[in-house]
Every structure is written in C-alpha cells, then in structure tokens.
Length: 198
Image (tube, rainbow, N blue to C red):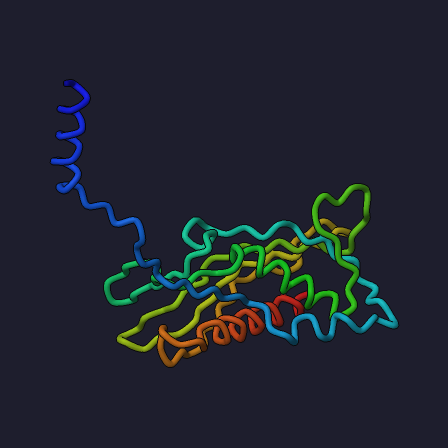
C-alpha cells in the first residue's frame, strides 16, 4: 500500500517539475596577443648574439587585468565590466611575457627568466601590467594597454630607466574580430619602446 501511495505521489508531482536539461550555451570567442610575425623572426637563428644578458622578472598584473576576461572601461561612468562572450586564451601577463621573450630573442638578446640561479646579468627587467582593456570614450572604442617598466643595471645596481607606457589603438566596434589585432598592435608599440630602453 505504501508503495502504491508513493508511486501515485511521484506521478502527480512529476508533472509539476520541469527540468530543462539541454540549455543553450553562449558562444565564447577567444583572443590572443600573438601575431604570426611574433615567432617568424625568432625562428631564424641569431648569427651574432647581443652582448647584453637580460634577466626578466615575472610580469605582474593588477586584479582585473590578471584574468582571462576582456575588460571594458567606460570613461564617462568609470564603470569596469566584462565583455560577454569574449575571453583571452591565456592570462594577459603570460601572453605579454611570451611576446616580450619572442621580441627579445628576435633582437638576439641573451634572456633568462626566473629562477635565475647563479647567472650574472647586465640588466634586470621588471614589468607591471597596469591595464589591458577596451576603452569606451563617448561611444568610440580603443584597445588600451599600459605597462610600467624598470630596468636595473646589475653592474652598478642603479635603476637605469623606469617609465609608464600607454598605447591606444582605435577599434571599429567591440563586436568584430579586429579587437585582437588592435590589442596586438598596442602591445607591439609598448614592448618596442621597452626594448629601446635596454
């Protein structure tokens, strides 16, 4: 009798519960800072290595720019939000580090990353990623990257150079594919200025 009542209750309440198992997933587009040119030149071996031996410290990034989310900053309302359906393929600091290493090797620098061990360096390079965002200024969008870098001369133990570098590249919109190309150009501009400081 209990089994009969239990089956009857399950049958009656079974019609009240609607479980939607198959739901639509939002399409996510992934972007990177790497361009085919980033690695193309690095494949050619350097015939003469640059005399400078560079130690690259880890790249630091502040909290909103240390995630895979693409960030939108509205300059009018000062609101920071995530762009839905668009993500970085890797963390921005890792992509920037890979791109910087490729550029250093393309210029034939001898470069090492942490842990250094007992190596002697001519210079130590430290970079902090301050922003990597889509900037909305009165309805016009641009890819913006800001970094702070410090170069320390290891022979004299004096800070050679330090500066904050910012690059903005205009974007047509945030819905099309040119976002990644805009960020790649902006990061190239900033990293090329860092290389000149070495």
